[in-house]
Length: 485
Image (tube, rainbow, N blue to C red):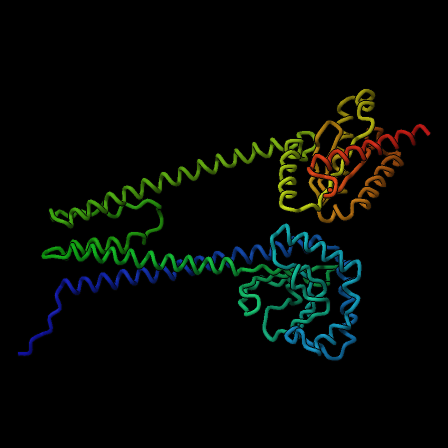
């Protein structure tokens, strides 16, 4: 009689446990990777679509049409279009030479500055306008706001495959690509409409390279943790295997495998329900598992309660901080917020950033308005001036630092265009003065003075403030002299 090959129950049990642990680990790692990738992709896709829509609706479609027509007029006159895949070649350079002069157009520069402002706000990698020629499989760049690798106007991306807008739905859904040049990238496009027709598409690119790298590292860490956990479980099993313990072990194994199969409740009591009275290491293990379960349930409950408490505390702190920095009358930022802004400016100066300025605005005749018409009318004048200042200096923070005094911190667009903005400000005041439909307290008057940081004379923000305040005072004296004349 042939002797049957013997495999001890201990070996079978160990092999089974190893197989179970490895299966759970692999499934857990794959599930975690899939869930993480899905959440990240959806979050970045939603962000790209939201940004593209938000920027697109802010654009003037007639200006977009004007610049698009300027580029397309050249595009239609060219017989042979050279796609961007031949970037840098003689043929491509010769093709792109046809579009010389487009980048010098004021409207082109306006869009570039506009897009870069939104790129800074939304932390996007690139915002640009593309005109799609679906039948030709061409995406024609109109204007690109990228700081470093901007595609010039007229540059054509040629695609054989891809998602293109159609007549029924001109919105281009967010797509995620992984290319050699740009790596992981999510792109979304929103149509710019004029009279019900698509003029062009506002596109947004957001790099996902960093988050994808973190995702891979996260999976590696989880895999290592799963491997360590598997080894620990195997070692425990080796110590517990013995005569008459297989059945209890199976019970424990089944309980462990199915522990999180029911997701209805965060807190589980699977081990608490087990009744194993073997009076040996298995009983001790069960007791330990019960204690672990109780500790986990207690920790989960405590964590949930702590999270709720922290959220409530953070909300209250944020609300109090916001109220402390907001002017109750006008709703804009107050003197406290300005002091905080000064700290930021001083930090910028220490880091070598000098491009900023301050604008002082002082409301005229507030006392006369209060004495003649009452303080409520004076408050109307203050609020009216506040609205005007915020409207003119829409790219800069505005602060009410006194009863009738306002400060604007100039940066970027407003810093470079301060003179034209002040001209617009006084023009609006002149319109108020000439409007006979306005009440006297609505015909506000104000003096404006500004100063830009000069590193040859200024050392602190206070130095710039003093010069801006003096400029405002000089303007107020000049206006008073003109009225007497």
